[in-house]
Image (tube, rainbow, N blue to C red):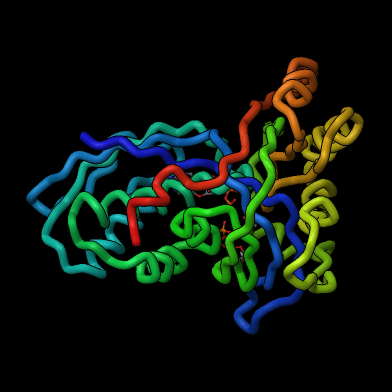
Amino acid sequence: MFTFSAPAKLNLFLHVIGRREDGYHLLQTVFRFIDYSDQLSFRLRTDGIIKLHNPIAGVPEEKDLCVRAAILLKQATGTQQGVDIFLQKQIPMGGGLGGGSSDAATTLLALNYLWKVNLSKQHLLKLGLQLGADIPIFIFGENAFAEGIGEKLTSIKLPPAWYVVLVPPVQVSTAEIFASKDLTRNTIPIKIPPFSVWQGHNDLELPVCRSYSEVAQSLEWLKRQENTTITAMSGSGACVFAEFASEAAAQAVFEHIPDSMAGFMARGLDYHPMQQIVK
Ligand SMILES: C[C@](O)(CO)[C@H](O)COP(=O)(O)OP(=O)(O)OC[C@H]1O[C@@H](n2ccc(N)nc2=O)[C@H](O)[C@@H]1O
Ligand SMILES: Nc1ncnc2c1ncn2[C@@H]1O[C@H](COP(=O)(O)OP(=O)(O)OP(=O)(O)O)[C@@H](O)[C@H]1O
């Protein structure tokens, strides 16, 4: 059995700058990996069967993104091999932390290696994008400035940082938020370099906060805390986070989260833990 982790991401900012003809939105965002992860274990099979042994409640096995990723890789390479998958979820679902996307990317990276089918990183990036806009970043493997729908990636160096992430008790549908009439779709594009991750905002915050008061309240609470360098929602929510330049500053805020709110603390990573597994 081989075990790999699938880290969560934060969008340090997320600007919606337009819309493609197919309805997908054009973004500018900065992705940062954090040390808060799902775990995926793989046992190889020779009979070609792909089986997820512990499907998530409410997500049928064939709809799970790691199963879909395994099937896609099998089809793309024509391999006759199969795999048993065991998924240990930690990343909240519908949280804007890219959990399902990260599971799919880890599956693509792990099976590309374990099945010895050896597709290039470029090829895996394309396969990942077929499953979702958030998957390429996890294959790219470095914190990045992203454009397009998240597939045009430029690696970016970020300073050490710690995060307090609040997890409001709601799941937000990404499609629903991008379809909202309250969404601003014409933020002025920023140029790189230089730009500051601390001057951005998340255009999806307003429609999410209007529909989900729990998200608005969590964000308001974080904005009242001291020593934060960023406070924002990640992706399409529901999670919101505050960034700190020191672990002690994050810890001080984490210890005072009200009983009515739930959350966790995480450290910002420089690289995806599987970054070296593909060229
Ligand atoms: C909000 C982010 O998390 C930021 O990182 C991502 O853009 C969302 O990526 P994702 O969850 O992988 O989203 P997908 O599964 O590709 O898309 C779900 C739905 O969201 C809408 N969608 C998504 C991404 C995008 N750039 N524009 C969109 O309009 C589309 O209606 C799409 O059908
Ligand atoms: N392995 C998986 N883990 C989590 N969700 C999955 C998985 N496979 C499929 N899904 C489906 O994807 C939906 C979105 O889940 P996910 O946790 O990735 O949301 P998210 O963090 O908001 O995503 P993003 O930040 O990419 O928009 C879930 O509600 C679920 O129906």
